[in-house]
Image (tube, rainbow, N blue to C red; front, top):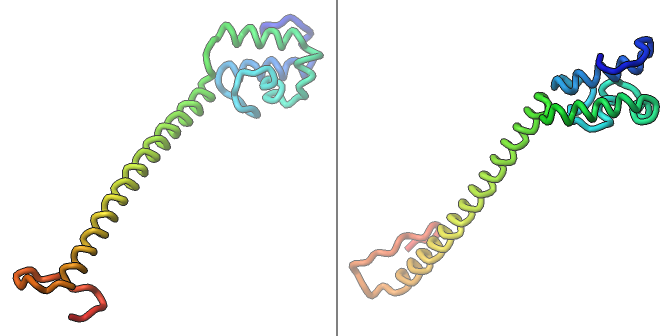
Length: 139
């Protein structure tokens, strides 16, 4: 414990322990972010204990966060997973757009071939060309 205060205050001790856990990247009750409210949440006490009753602890936490200048391990892992999921999502969106473009091309080709086949079947002038049979219609 780095703050100077009576050790008999359980709220103060809980906040100090929560600060240490947060800065070590081992949050118990909080998200692991390094905001002012997180030590109170992690300690299981009301926020006002930190922001109004123990101002020195709030300042100490802010100073330790600035000196650490890093994201806690637990929260960094979550951020990394989130970034990975965002990358995968962007790749899937791109892949879907590509598939939709292919689908439009295939639909156009199928439609054109169907029209050509119907036109060919209607004009039986060239005996060497045999139209494809249409399903459900007998010749």
